[in-house]
Image 1 (cartoon, rainbow over the protein chains, first blue to last red):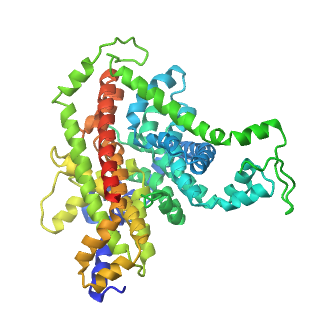
Image 2 (image 1 turned 45 degrees about the vertical axis):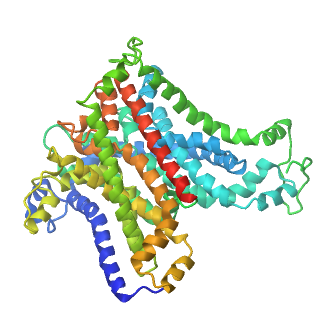
Image 3 (image 1 turned 60 degrees about the horizontal axis):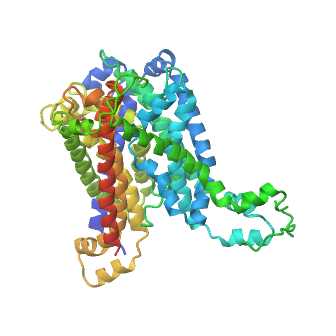
Amino acid sequence: MKPRSGYQAFRVVALAVVVIALMAPLLWMIAASLKTNVDIYDTSKALVFSPTLDNYGTVLQQANYVQFIVNSLWVAFAATVLSLLLGVPAAYSMSRFNMRKSALVVLMARVIPGVSLLVPWYYVFSNLQMVGGFGVLILSHMFVSLPLVVYIMMGYFDGLPTELEEAALVDGLTHIGAFRRITLPLSVPGIATAGILSFIFSWNNFMFALVLSGADTKTLPVAIFDFVGYASIDWGGLMAAATVVTLPIMLIALFVQKYVVSGLTAGATKG
Amino acid sequence: MATVTTPTRAPGGVAPVGYVSAWSRWANEHRKWLFAAPAMAFVAALIVFPLAWTGYLSLTDAEGSVRAESEFVGFQNYVEVLSDTDRFWPAVARTVAFTGVALLFEVVLGMAIALLLWRPFKGEKWVRVAILMPLVATPVAVGMMWRLIFDPNIGLANQVLGWVGIGPQPWLAGQHSALPTTIFIDVWQWTPMVVLILLAGLTSLSDEPQEAALIDGASAWQRFRHVTLPLLMPTVIVAVLLRGIDALKTFDILYATKGRGGGSFHEVETLNVYAYGLSFDYNEYGLSSTVLILFFLIIIGSMWALTARKKGAQR
């Protein structure tokens, strides 16, 4: 089917509007992060200004953001690796043995409001003297990423033919051996998708870290929130901080676009 | 597959693991639960027990410190919360309004954009990149970004309105404009999610019904209304379900743009923000647990209603 040329012209214009509406705010944020506060307050310098990296200096040196970047990386990395370790075998079992009810238990974690769990967690972990440490932060982020991993990997395993595993069994591998040597290597794209999504969701998580992190374990979203003081806002610094947290994740998404999209839409069309 | 009990060396050269020990045999026979149990135990430990505790706390007068003594008060908290027309019911109304309006815009705009992207074209890759960016951007940072853009004095939004001769608006700072502005932010960030889901659905549709309708002389609108939309309905409902759950639970952008209590007049205080404030700003654990149990029931209820519709649409 070839659409008519009138539609094509409309389509180009409409999609251009969509792209501008989605990208302009982000570009504006990056532009503001490169302006002095004087230039931000001067609306005549909206587009023409002399860029400076001073705001990044403020954020990275004075506001201790290097530490928060390391914290965020560590928590997201640990939560992702642990979620994959627990989630991939679980998804395999749930897919091969058709354990739909068990899968539902794990997916409940996506439905329950985080706040309703935070109070009891806070109760328990503060009695264990764990609040403010990395352990509890990683556990809470796993709570976000593990269901994601299970959900994505179940869909992936459902789509893998079982014939290869059966052939491996005939060749003398055990069931677990077949999983390790045949299924896992075939699942690398699925595992990559699940891992990337899990990393993004952990990196972006705000509420759990807001309650459970301490001064030394603060992650970037909490650090940005704390940047807004009670007095006037340092807009340049705030936009630099916002850019520091969003730009890496946007670059990751840019390079592994295919995986991110397949992860976000996993299972959506199966009905 | 239980017939393979005595593994032999594979001819291909790959050494089989084999049942080298009793442990290996046991592990293979119990692999179903060996694989699934750790993940399930983890989730259950972090859900079941906390949720039960929240349920218990909702029946007590717990407040102040997490270690303070609390007394069992029965359904007193529920009576108090359900008769609270000052904070609770307005928060329910805001949650429903926020979710309903945001979902409506996200689904309509998402459908329009997905249809625009449906057939291949030059430059498609770049549009897809632009669609992905708001989705992966950190919500707190997105909230801060819009705070600057919607600043009444120096923000880009009022500047743009000035060019077309419209006076400055208070946006997030206005008592009545704050909630619509946060809805706008949610629509900006999450419409792309709906686009991606619907696009995946559209791509999986076969061309034949479309072509048949075209031969029958159906207009573009008729083809959409009577062919594409009914076929796509299950995917639309999945999108509404996924986005709806997250919209009900929206916290990050509301807290980032308006702070504690959803602003000084609680302009954007939804149930989630209210419950968070009761728990961690006021330490009213008993009351907050009651609000959370009610909130949870609302979420489960709406999910149940939607899944019922989905089953109906698939029939």
